[in-house]
Length: 334
Ligand code: PHE
Image (cartoon, protein in one colour):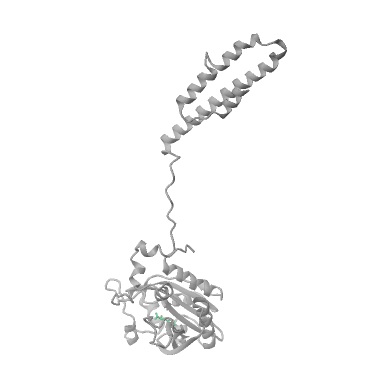
């Protein structure tokens, strides 16, 4: 019985050790044969019990040898096949979202809660969708506001300068009521510096229905700034865009702690975050919407600048250099 315990406790991953264990118990001069030889000397009344015990021992020893040899063979062949499976694994690098995507997703999330869907369009545009339909006919001086990259020498094909082009496409293909935001990359031929780049990202919004008013615009913007920045004190400064009338620049009151921010009108606490206005009736008509029946508002903001602001990034170029030391600081994967 002692031997049975020993057999059960035995383990080894060395083939030689398993083999000498087998010889010790099951070999010609092994423990078991010695017990079997002893059998004839055992008194008759104990023969039954003695027999049972040595049979049990024999089975235990045989099972042990077979199972150890089997697992040795398995690990030998899997080592050959897959390498050493007992080595510690390589750590997975968990990726994270780019700060532009983080901010973009946040903006989409906020507007989707008040019924805006997401629309997209091509980055290579034609003149109609980027300019003419938006009330910027050829030779309109406001075209100079947006330094345009043209594709090859064709003045009709260009890299979109804003995602208002997506709004034009959306109006052409959908009937009001329309509530859509258009996030995407845009291009302008500007000098590259820590504050501006020749490409950046925008989210533009469009709401068209019967009876949409400037008050609706202001409420929507206030909801947005509250959700996005935790600040609902905004002001609308009169401005000019060819596609909206009236037009305004939206400032958020930031309090005094970010006075040093580059866009802060010094010491006032107001921070400019987007442009907006009531869609010009000409634009609605250009896109096949009856301007006597419908009105609407539009707004547009730069994602990159909001990302710089929220994540305290000092140079816009960091956003497009793919430097892992920079990107790894943004842990969120959402
Ligand atoms: N399209 C404008 C821009 O790129 C932003 C804007 C959108 C302004 C909608 C007013 C209304 O600067």
